Image (cartoon, rainbow over all chains, first blue to last red; front, side, top):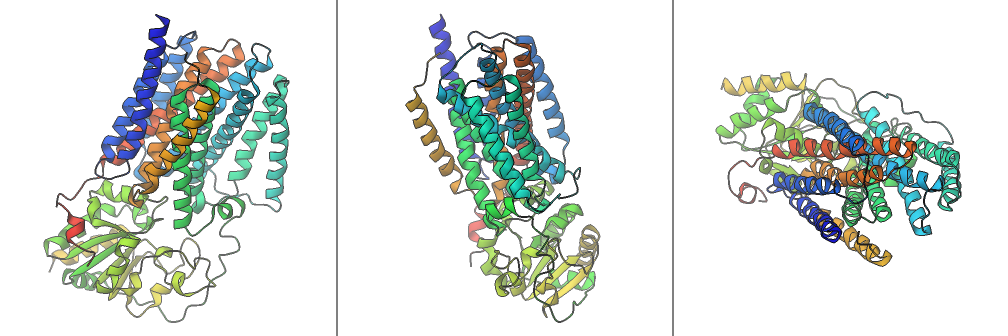
Length: 462
Length: 106
């Protein structure tokens, strides 16, 4: 009987691991993505259900209560969050996973320190490492959530913060070795976890909001790794596989994001952005030239090719629905309209695609920078809405600029470039945008949603 | 339960690391946010581990920590699923077959 049960449990975990990998694979194409998460979801239900039959378990009341409390809270918050706030929700749920991994280590190490059980050195080392990574990911993700949610507004930079973190890390390493040795009392254990949580906070607080997506992605990979270590500790292959797959996929995703933002990972983690670079950048000569919405409407309606470049400003103004309405009107007139998305448009790579999808824009009208940059020269109108640094030509031309070398969308190469912008100020990074001063650029001042509504009106009246 | 030998576990670790890398390597940037969210959901499997840890906890301290662990793990799994599904449900094609191939690239 026990053998059959054990076999059923192992088989269920095996199926779950298979479904996770297949699900992730399907999530890597827009055609199959929606089914991918369902595959992975089935795997999770199978694995969770069979775990109730795990041998030698008790505390079932506590367990069921905890699942309901955690699950319902997450379900409720996940259902009602706005699409613009998605990045911080990912940070929040990821932090919970890290905390959960740390808690597993906590339970196991507590049992050892109270003398209830003893384990091999490998077990102890992995439990300590999993607890360390999970705790840092937990407290770090919570700070990231607080920053993006606007709960924490300051960046808290001070001289020597890297030394403070290094000192903390040293203390944690020493405590960790003591704990792994198996001779730690409860207060040493508590101090170990306390300092680890503190390190996550002090590491994340100085990092600016613009870099947060990279940090969230990094913590996501770290949680994966922590889960894999706990899988070793608990002798659970499904956890090892799922955790490791996420750990390596997450590391790759972190690198891709950092590259798209023209930053190195070390740069993101160990130096604050914005402080010293805000004043940098060459001077720009010339003036910005304003234009009226009616003129832009005529220009677009009689164009052959139009490329729309949306930025986070468009999402903040909630203009994406109006933009799609404008696109449909133009398409009916035979204008070829496409969307060009910069990798870091929005708060996170791919975030803008989600926001456009929410407004109903089909994904096959949306193009990456690499796919569309060659098209700008044959484009009549490039319409920039709420984007700034990602269309700044100095990234190509001015080696002294902090964004030099960053891949940009070549809106300046279009025959006409229209920029919808609230006012005349510089962008998020404080760098003057050369594009606004070019001869083929016209500025349409106003709130994103109002300006696009005027454009719709202008096209309709033709 | 069937014990994994340390080396079997190491082999699993190595192969899974390559798998994760390969699965993500060719993903278009448009899916980066949902994919991060999806991988965030997958490590929600930590819930299973937290359940086992709580299920074997003897001391009150262990039960409290295990209880918190299961709450957090369940939050990771359920929250990760809900937001990923909401995002991916919105991705729709324009219905024109091969819209991307026939236009553009000119």
